Length: 355
Image (cartoon, rainbow, N blue to C red; front, side, top):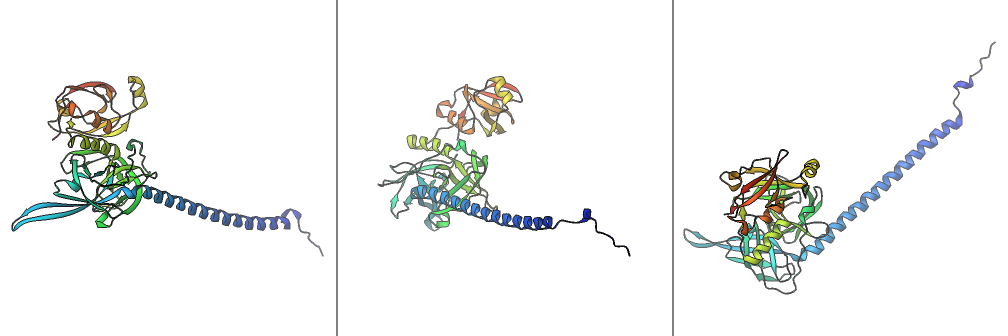
């Protein structure tokens, strides 16, 4: 009888099997530990997010007010009144309040309710339907005011918080992110408002005029509109635009605005063009559309042109263009510097007064 011996070459050492079993158990333990760590990280992140929102709201909410307006109307059987509601926020310690033009325009009576329960009548300092910005004022002591941030530093995806009085529910807070920058929308006057902020922070009727703030509790914009059938598409007037307009309204009570008749958006300029022409800024205003019978049309400005200067003053954004188109420029010959394709052009233009 022949006895066959087992070959050691095919034998699996017992310690190898044990090592494989141990390594699998160790991997499972490591996986559980990593999952637990990730859960703790998520919890810490959520807590940090909550703390950020709470801190920003604590800074801004004491300056956010509810605005009740009444407007007299003529009806067939006699005079009547229409009531409305909106939001606003205090921008100076002596009672100036920023809100939307469409909230207070043509109002016969304006009443401001402060967060601490106090109620004061308000006077209209001035409103500008072309940018949907208005300033009202109350005479009240111990007022908390907010700080306006530089909206040129905004980034898509940045955390934002909207505070207001939607549907009459005072001091409501919603949070979201900046969805897009450089949007344009039509004001009730029909003028195109440029440099609009798009956000997904929920807005409802009554939020109009309230602040859109960043994580530091600084105001980035004035909430102005939402698209009713859509979800999460809301808009705010950029703080730089609001700051500029509010300054004019507080000083003069109205705005005489130069007008050239273009809609534009902020865009970067290719670095080769910047270097070739020695441009001081690496951004400009892209002409999206040119209105018929406008100064821009008569100056032969075209869609796709890139505005980089006005009267040799650098223009890097729509806000810069608004700043140079002041009342003093109305009816005064000026020069518009544009990049068309790769060619630099100087176009003579005669700004008109915005109506």
